[in-house]
Image (cartoon, rainbow, N blue to C red; front, side, top):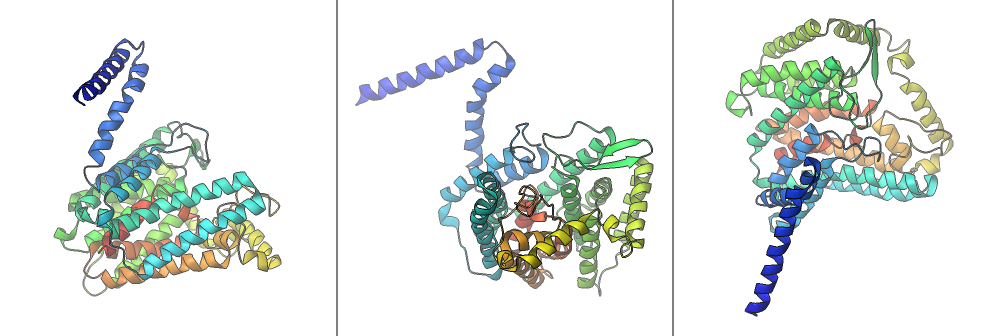
Length: 454
């Protein structure tokens, strides 16, 4: 027995020696890095699996601060955060005894929506073929990452995470992402591997809208709205209930507001407006909102000072939208009305088929309706793609989140945060496919988990 163990140890030592020698004699730094990568990955894996919450920090950091890989796969290419999500599944198995799932309306709504989306993949295969069905399944699984993170944080091993520390780290990562987006817009760095071609035409030239490291500018705008709501909620509560200092909140507010403006997103600004209206209503008897108004004014002035031409164009766009919303609706809504009319006409002509849908996220990639259609409306796209069940599940989820958060909002910073933001999100869902923003949606559902966790 001892001789067999010694022989195996000898072989292991020999292999390690050959590996080390291969790294030493590799002709280039890149080759050395490739050969040494397994050791580095093993160290990272060992460190991450020492605590049930560490993979979450790694996942959020990767999702918010890393660009997609330059590989032609999907719309924007694969992302490192997907590998970390797989590591999260392993963590869930390792700490299986920590799970304490209880039946609630929010949980049932999450499971129902995910189940409907998954079931619609079969319809995608029937109506649009194998490649479209594969893309549909991939997008369902990406949405599933957000659902898993919610359950992991609310009822699983993620309950051990320190809520305030988690919020501070997310705030810091978000601020870095917003700062990069502003710098990226100013210098117009080369776009990430895949990106939505969204541009602004100014007298000085054509500029790509601020998107930072995300696929499109709308994702950045929605992400900035989320943290602007956090800042507003923190300013209405005692200092000890805020995850960061007042100075950090002020600096972050200016930064996130600037990035939101540079993303050229109007729907995200409406999101913020609805969120602030809910916040004001919840605190109507005890909080003055002068500091929030001052912070917004400072952010607007700084944006105007640094990007005067762009800020003027953005203001003109907002003014045009308000003035001509009912007389030039198609122009104000950037062509969305034509898409909505196409989808509404198809639903009216195919009511029975619309009952079950044609497959989740197939509209932009299928010719089944004649031509690919970008819905830019989560409710309408779910109606066509997943049928009545999909829309009903989404509405149920929205109502369940708002009701659950409202019950805890008075005594919980996180519940007030998600209540206000998700109220704005339910409105913005009518102008964008927000459930496909898989890199930021897990952050939102993580805060929901912190608000509702057992």
